[in-house]
Length: 268
Image: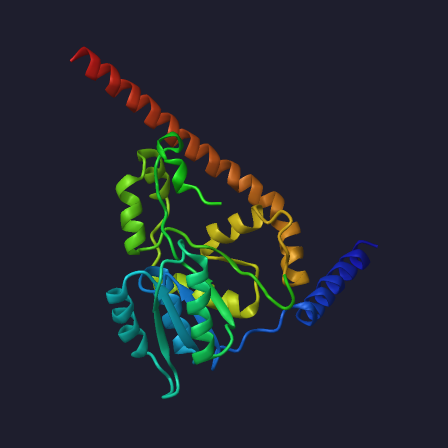
């Protein structure tokens, strides 16, 4: 009886594995596709543009700094695989006038065709204590359109260097418990997940565990993915509790160290 149940379970899993591709979104063919990358003049955005260009895509780079855009354009064009590929640069601040952004995107579509993939990498992380941040720093499917939410880890980019300048000690120590990734590695994974139509894009085992633990009501792109989340949720939650314990310990040590420093300053 036990063997029969085990055989049934194995057969069920195999059936899900075979049926899964039938309900998954059709992968995006990058050769000839029009990819728009905001924040594409540096960091992960530029590396994503390079990765897509390597696979035959037409690129529209959107960023504020025109000099950086032209420099990024030259770097991306080194990776062309045919003479027809184009890199279009648009200098605009996407956080300002929306009508201006809409107009330049229309111009890009007139030159390179409809947008097949939109990559939003504009902006940067502003690190700091919640009570010290200004209010102004907070900003608040249809048919056949798929969204990929990326969870990039700490990545060796200019934005990450700026983030570290204001990062509190607790956050920095927690961040140092894992390694810093190369932007090329992160970009390659994001592009891979985006063209496959995956909702989540994560890097490494920690990223996969985090995306599984926070999936909630997020859509799945295959039955296999949903089954993996159901099966691994309990194990990942157990591992996460050990992570949280370690992080809490770091925060407590910093609090004690800060209190001792304050006492020493008062008695000095």
